Length: 116
Length: 113
Image (cartoon, rainbow over all chains, first blue to last red; front, side, top):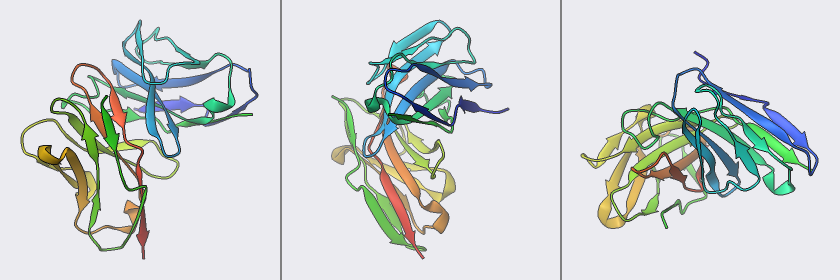
C-alpha cells in the first residue's frame, strides 16, 4: 500500500511550457484534491474530484486543468506555465469527503515546481 | 467568507515546555476543524479533528485542541514539547456541504534545546 504518490518530486519549467503533475493513490479513495502551498499562505485548493469523471474548481483554479478518468489517478495540468505558478503542489485523497468524521485526508509528499 | 487565521507566524519554545498554538475561524455555522502538521520536506499529517460533541479533542503525538465557540477558536496544545515536534502546524476549517478544507497560513514551531 503506497498511499498517495506524486511525480516528479522536483521540476523546473520555462515560462510558457506545459506539463502534467501526476498523482496516484492505491487506497480506492473517491475524493482527491490538488493544493498549492506558498510561503505565508498555507495551502490553497486548486481543483478537487469526488469520483471518476467528476471534478470541480477550488479557490485558485486558473491556469490549471484536471481530469479523473480512473479512481486511482488525478493528474494536474499546467497549460502554459507562469512564474506565479512557482509553488509546492500537494495531492490529497480520502475515502469520503475530507470533512467527514469517518475518514482522514491523506497527503502526498509534494512536487516542488519552479517556473523561470 | 469563511477564513482561518493563525496569528503567530513563528513560535520558539524550550524542550519540555508547554505549547499553545492559536487558531481563529470565521464561519456562520458550527465548523469542522482540523489541525495538521508538516515536517520539513514532507506532506501534511492530520493531528486531530473536531466535528461535534466534546469540545476537548485528543489527537496523535500527545496533542489536544479545544473548541471554544464563544471565541471562534480552536487552539492546539501540548503539555511538554519534544525536539521532534519542530514543524509547521496548520489549522483548517471544513464545510459539511463539500469536500473542501480551507487552511490557515501556518505557524512554524522551533524547539530550543
